[in-house]
Length: 377
Image (tube, rainbow, N blue to C red):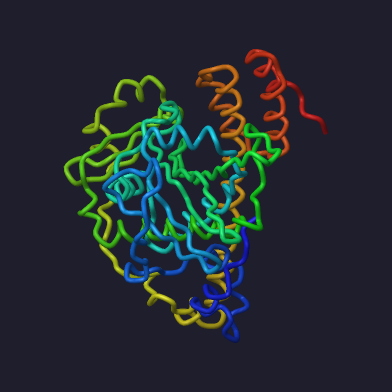
């Protein structure tokens, strides 16, 4: 569940001011948008590079209130090495979805081509260690922080998965700990809590969005990427960004690598350079300063309703993808008709049932028959 914004964010957005109570349900309060400016992004620390850090790329400092966190981009061998000696931490899909929604509402959306363009420009090319069926890029980092005077290391990857972005954390596996490296674990709050992980994700997303939207043209280099699992193609061609999806598998396969086709059909509006901003407000200004009385309450109510709907849809979509991922891992490629049937399911109880069946049933035909079973009640 997404935490409330920390005190310094509340103060910056004017959320503790008298009369701001009715704003508590708006998207700006349920995520950690800080209205960053590039001047607030701290310089890279001067520290010796760890083993497996990619040469020629500066480290990146995230100044959390509780502790500084340093990111080092890993080499291909480094990514593989750290993956084998770390254990996975449970992900917070809802937080990333909510924050990306907030950025879009704030006029700083980070669509897939924008995300790849700014990541590649700042941190080099994508890793080749990825699932080419449902991933089009992955950027692995060694995350270093201090706990009780000792360095603690995590593997953090920014992954394009199906139609969205994931931030995945894996903790260094220490020899004295009795942890199953193949099972997902909750965070270790004493050393690196969920709020701190979300703080890192929030800072990175805002930094990437701000960097891109400050000068979109500087990131407009030619590239073309596809996500076969969801029939998505995106990229940039001759300075024009594009993002599209084909629902018909045969048409997607026929045009998958044709950048000109996708550009002509699915070009995105040219981003407008901007340096501050949250929906026309000065950085740090209270939302209330632009609206008064009943107008503010109505706007807050509408935003809260849209936000709640978006959050539920994000959680439901994550559950659908969990079912598909289990099926793919166990049985290989999923037939198009079955994939579309699962993606059309909206009930959380039914998706939980299907996830359990995907884990337990012996083969894909048996699973397909469960979709036809009458539901209890």
